[in-house]
Amino acid sequence: MKALVFSDVHGERDPVQKLMRLAPDLGCDFGLFCGDIVRGSARGSEFMAAKSEGREPDMSLEAVQKERGEDYALYAEFHNTLRPSPFPIYGVPGNMDAPEGRYLTCALAEEGADSPLEVVHRSMARCGEWVICGLGGQITEVDREEVFVLQYPRWEAMHHLRLFELVEGPRIMLLHTPPIGEVVDRDNGGHKGSQVVNELIHTYRPELAVCGHAHDAEGQEMVGSTLVVNPGSLRGGHFAVVDLEAMEADLRTL
Image (cartoon, rainbow, N blue to C red; front, side, top):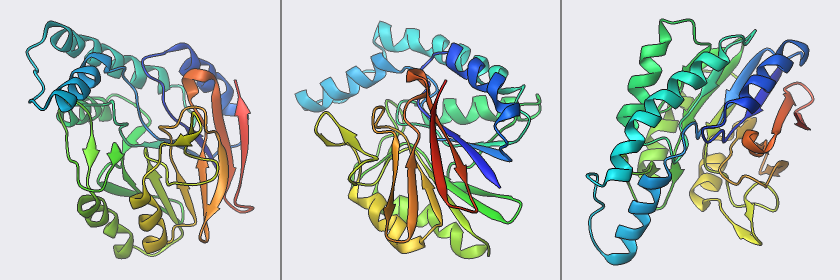
């Protein structure tokens, strides 16, 4: 079996359309989407400003309120653009796909409208013999936020990914946050990953873990016995095809 892996759209429709045109010829059996559908720049900026100033972020700001309508439009557009997919796609939200309730409401609204995307955030699915378990957002040590950005602390990540223990079969861990590594989390000479993700991988030992978040860190590497793949940003034209038998990724551009 083969899986199409893509991530980080950030409100851009054209690369999703191009990928869906390619999809029938990729030889894939299913897709894995690692999150960040919308832009969320006003929310994110207000969250960071409030944190640095030691205050609560303000949801009433005009720019933040304006993003609400944009979010709904971008979620609908994303689901609509995925409809030509010849195979099911499993996905999680990115850290910018906040508030969590808005993301989930839009996803549920599309479930009965022929969208191929099945959300496995805090959940799991089976595709053939493969068990897919996911948690989106930014995985942190202790920080938690689900309104301005999506952040989930260690205890919550460990709790939700325990679902792997309930079902037998080869495992795929679907995340937005990368582990700290040599390749898949590199960002301007530093790291954008989380040590918590490394621990999740060592604890649950999936055959494959996929992630995004670090837009220019497309690549693959081993963390323990797990192949970790960051396809890079689809907004930047990057995606990957993973051969689940050979357990290796073919990194591609549109």
